[in-house]
Length: 257
Image (cartoon, rainbow, N blue to C red; front, side):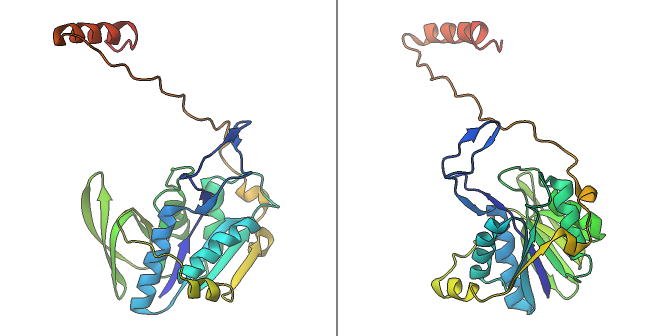
């Protein structure tokens, strides 16, 4: 199987994030593979081990993203591709990312493309389906189980707390939901092998794409943290008096009744 896994370099939301001047301050921030993309990489490796073929991980960004690609290679992916957009584009939105990725993949004869359901830094969940639409192939989102048999895939997908079973034909793009698998940690031998695995670096010119063709369609105005929550209050006294006080507070302070 010819498998591609789309990955994104994101902030580690388990670490402290600082917002300055309407954006996230990168100085001192920790970066990781988007966690949902780790499910995609892991599933690609498992399917390759079962059916043969190879797994290529693909990302957009600058040279800093090489670290995340090497992590995916250490997990067990075979090859990596970095499309360097830092020197050409000031901003990348879902339209931009999907257009560039689809242009790269259009002649790669991919049997299966895996992506994360959402990116934790944006949460739009648009890039995967957009890529599939541009390539003209089937796609299924929020999958929690995937079995491939020849040219068909049997899929279980999450639908708001329930599940749905779908059969689809390859070539196919799927987006991975939590529960699909347990991504492996890179082993020391895997990390050493990753240093020798091929990592191809491309620019937009290599894809015959003009900057104007992929200019972002949306503009991010500002990023800001939610307001701090006020401290809770504990009501005391007789239960009847507490109920009266609660109703009064909901009416005068919270203004919800």
